[in-house]
Image (cartoon, rainbow, N blue to C red; front, side):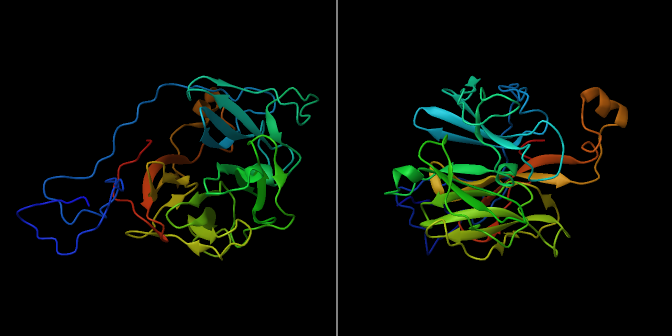
Length: 317
């Protein structure tokens, strides 16, 4: 039991926390505040650690996922050298490895021929539209089949989300032909994980607040007991209401307090242009991709269909 004693407030129904770690990322355990505020720490840009500079990579790489497996870090990302429609076979899924999260190398896997050579780090190719936004995770469910240690989802509105499994994060196979999650737009990154606190697989996926691609870009949630049969996606609600576009959520259980889900969500601001056409040209930015802005905000959830945004300052500005 973790107890808090104050002279001003008598708590008649305390939370029994046991030995569970709690984070002050929301107001869940805060009854009142006077003269104090919740503030986020300042992140420091330490510079680039990995360049997407191979012929099968390029400026349209994205939807990166970092997984810690034992003593190594695994970076999964989309390889895409040029702009185009979502879900083409130009898109691949690539892997980089690191022992410290700073120095990264590309394993020469020889699995798929891309640009006339198998000398690359591609783990999925010719699998459109899965490779548009393939997002894997390390399954922490107790007693999981070793051949399904890694799982992942990818796909678009037309295909639904397709499930893949892998014993090592390198060699992947499709779990079944039919999609496992439907009913979303899926036009960005859709993340999933095993929830220790809910004892369910949880997927946070892209939807819109209006019909089709109308309204605001938003996030919905679906759950499953077996990673095959999923519930109908439920629109996430935002404490205080949603007045902003959210492009990706990256919702994950916090590793030292897995009952709290932390989302470093990309807040999207369409039409907010901060560089001129000339400046964009000097930066080498595609002419179609400089008229909008994005930053990142911190959202949290405790396994419900509600996101809290109790810290208003941008996480990454």
